[in-house]
Amino acid sequence: MNPKIEVNDLNLWFGRVHILQDIDIIIPANQVTAVIGPSGSGKSSLLRCFDRTNELITRTKTTGHIVIDGRDLAFEDPLDLRSRVGMIFQQPASLPGSIYENVAVGPRLFGIRDRRKLDVIVEESLTRAALFNELKDRLKKSAGALSGGQKQRMAIARALALNPEVLLFDEATSALDPISTQRVEDLIDKLKSTTTIIMVSHNMQQAARVSDHTLFMNVEEDGAARVVEFGPTDKIFTNPEDEKTERYITGRFG
Ligand SMILES: Nc1ncnc2c1ncn2[C@@H]1O[C@H](COP(=O)(O)OP(=O)(O)OP(=O)(O)O)[C@@H](O)[C@H]1O
Ligand SMILES: [Mg+2]
Image 1 (tube, helix red, strand yellow):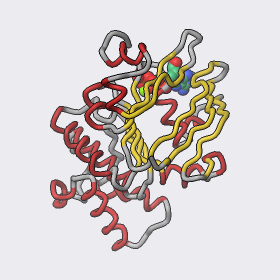
Image 2 (cartoon, helix red, strand yellow):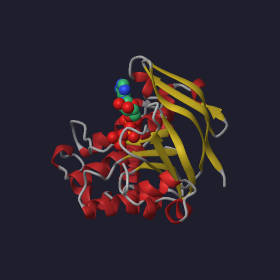
Image 3 (cartoon, protein in one colour):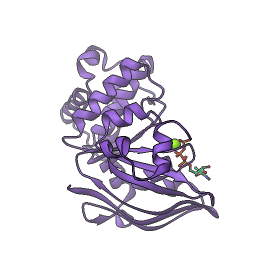
């Protein structure tokens, strides 16, 4: 297993509230890691540690280290980091403006002005997001008119336009219909050849279907979230070590 992200003794507080406690995990490169666990078990908070967006929330404090390819995130420029680590949210978001502008926004932010370069990036990103053929005749039209599933694949294309090494999906299909969900799952499967993917899901079938490794988080009685179990998805879903994992994946709690 080739490690992409090493998380060492990570702790997170919002104000005085201890949210994540003593997280130690290694996320493998070019695989899909599912993050599962009940509501409030710190899954989104953990994802926000990887692109350092917790620090945009007031009064957060982080200790410990997250190292991507040997580089400690703490010493990176946050904007550069967020170009290498993309996030896809639950609600498919389109920005005002055209489909083209929605995909070009990241490269523009990083100073690419050349129209032909942008054209190539937009086409490649939409192609990788399995959306180009569907939308190629209306790239200059407003993105607002797209369906939820198309908007979500456009959000993926927007992230891909920056050539990210890591993509974070936070319940990215839970607002989508089954066919759009399938498309995003197919996409995740393709993208993992070039990208390390971490995917939060409340859907156990989806986590089992799509991921290679699974991380189960839970909130303990003291209110802080910890890792209960982390391992190959087959093992977590067929023969978990911890009784809490078993109860969660079989739907008996959470
Ligand atoms: N901005 C914030 N300020 C204060 N507390 C927060 C903030 N965001 C999250 N929390 C708290 O952190 C804890 C973990 O929340 P988080 O959103 O990470 O859980 P989650 O596992 O993603 O839950 P869900 O499955 O419902 O999305 C919760 O107790 C939540 O109330
Ligand atoms: Mg969440």
